[in-house]
Amino acid sequence: MEKLAFYIVDVFAEEKYAGNQLAVVRDAKALSDDEMQRIAKEMNYSETTFILSDEKRDGGYDVRIFTPKKELPFAGHPTLGTAHVIHEEIVKEPSETVVLNLKIGQIPVTFSYSDERGDVLWMKQLQPKFGRTFDAELISQILSLNVKEIDDKFPIQDVSTGVPCIIVPLKTLDALKQARIAKDRYFEFIKDKQAKGILIFCPETYNNENDLNVRFFADYYGVPEDPATGSANGCLAGYLVKHRYFGKDQINIRVEQGYEIGRPSLLLLKAEGKEEKIDVHVGGTVVMIAKGELV
Figure 1 (cartoon, rainbow, N blue to C red):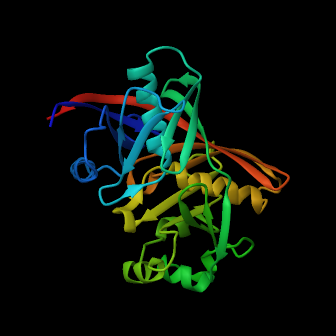
Figure 2 (figure 1 turned 60 degrees about the vertical axis):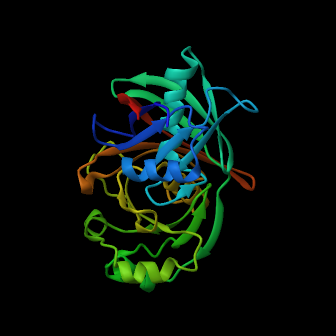
């Protein structure tokens, strides 16, 4: 195999080497599916992305996303991190938007501004799709929690903006910290469900500047707990608007994630309900960590 350039970027980090790291491999069109999967397993990040070519196709760049175990049609922090690499290493000139051609379709990423942590990027996600709701007693057992810790003013629901996940509202930060996946119950539960990941959230936060705290579990994908999850937070944004969690049909909020595993992350969520649609945008910082070659 010829040497391929690869990059490590930090996405959604509140501080360097926190957040959700991503490996991005460039000019990967010659790699087979099996080779991509082996590289993703070797990298052992939550996802590794492959930019197939430096040339655009239909106005965007062809990109594939792999976890250590599976290929994904879409994921949030890989989309933002890969757009950053394309912008800095391929485009190499000021640009407001980079478009990624992913399995689910084209996803535009907008470059908003820079702050001391790095570039702030925004991606518009697909329209949220709302699926079935679930019994609180069953979900509490999967999370190893007392059912009273679940906020019964809002449903437990399957939501998708590209990758489906199950959204679970909790009452307190103590309950969120105590949550532990009961793996036997979890794998039994998800075997006939499209949604494999579980996002839990609460209105209490470690940082008073933030609006919600989130944890995300996805053992099915080889990720027991993700420090920062753009796709699942996109689902959460749609959920918050649909169920008027903050009492209105639009949000512009800061979400913290990863504190419980020592990887403090910050995601920015904007969403607005318009007639029968909800527009969802997920944003955050991206910073380059390292560059190298695969041999």
